[in-house]
Structures are given as structure tokens and as C-alpha cells.
Length: 251
Image 1 (spheres, helix red, strand yellow):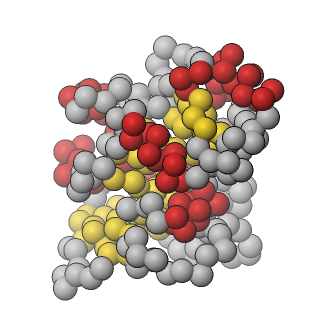
Image 2: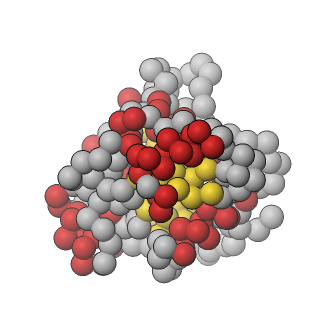
Image 3: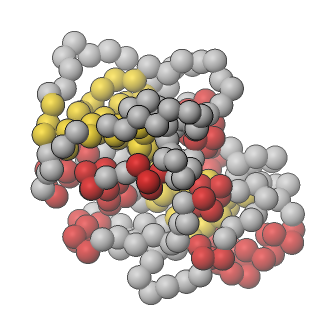
């Protein structure tokens, strides 16, 4: 993957239409990962949460990426740590989603081998999207029964024998007509998905913060394979950089 020309720097903040133009997915089927990082590579702040290092500019891109997505996939550890609930679309993005034939609020898929999902995610609400849970064949029947009683059989996805397999899960999401997929992590899930070669694009906000010390990066895993990224766009808002990389699937 190569390009002779680097993309021009776009300066923000941007209007909603400008964000739509900049972040429109290039293909009908596209898998994105969205993360924020400090300039020294930390994916979380001193409190261990990514929310403490985001910014208004990062939030604007975050909302745009969700608006383009048929479904959002997040690992249960990140769901728990970041206090996720079911997803809600900001009012300014509702018309765009419905015009594209998407649900008002994107469904949330929780990835968990154990079947342990926080109650706050399972709770229904009138202004939130559906929740689905991706499990394995080895998830305990007690956990499956508990989840089925809360969200129904149709919202349970079995996608692997002893771990949730990325390619299997994405194939089952496509069967439901969900071809624009966004994952928000965490780092272990992104590492597994990059290692599996299923990620098309990484959207990374780099914040002008230096924390030092030890902490997670946006991606963890044991693979030694390199994935080359082609820079698609660069957005600067105040001193933040929002980078879009198309990721090579070569192994």
C-alpha cells in the first residue's frame, strides 16, 4: 500500500457537513477502529480511562464515526471500565442516520467470552439502541440463559469455539445487513482484530499530552506481523491531530 501524495492538513473545528465529507467510508463494507492517545502513546489518562484524555474535537469525530456506523463493537472490559450504556445518537446526527436507512441509535455489540455484561448495558430505554452480546461455544449455559432472558435469543451471537473470532463475528453482522462496523476497543480487541486482518481503517486522535509512566497503548497483542498504514486525512483542531489510516490487510 503506497501513495505518492500525502493528504493536505484540514484545520477545524469543522461543520457537520465537513465532517461527513472527511469521514465518509470509502466502501459499502468497511471496518473502522476509533481511539485516542497521548503524544507519548498512552491510551488512557492517569485515572486509567480514555475519557480523561479526550477533547471537544475528538468528541466531534467520535460522534461522526458512530453516525456512519451500522453497529458498534466493544469488548466487555472496556464496557465495564468506561461505564458504557446502550448507545444514543446526538440530535444533530439523527437525520443523517435515518436518511441512510440506519437505525436512529446504533446497536452495541458487547464481546465477552464469559458472558459477564454489566446490568446498565442490558437495561432498556426509549432513546437508546439495541444491545447484542457476542459469546463463544464455551460460554456457560447459565450465562447464556441469563442474557437471553434480558435481551432475547436474536440478540445473542455465538462467534467462536473458545474465543470470539473477529472474522466470524463480522460475517454474522453482515448477515444482519450491518456492513459499516466501528470498534472502540479496547486495546486487546483491537490487537486481535489487527492480527486477524479484518481492520480497514484506524482513526486516531493524538492529544498534546505527555503522561509518562506505564499504561496501555491503543493496541496490545503478541503478533509480530507488521501492518502498513496509508494516511487518508489529517484534521487539526486546536493542538489535537485526528489521523485516518487505511490499514493494509497483508500478512
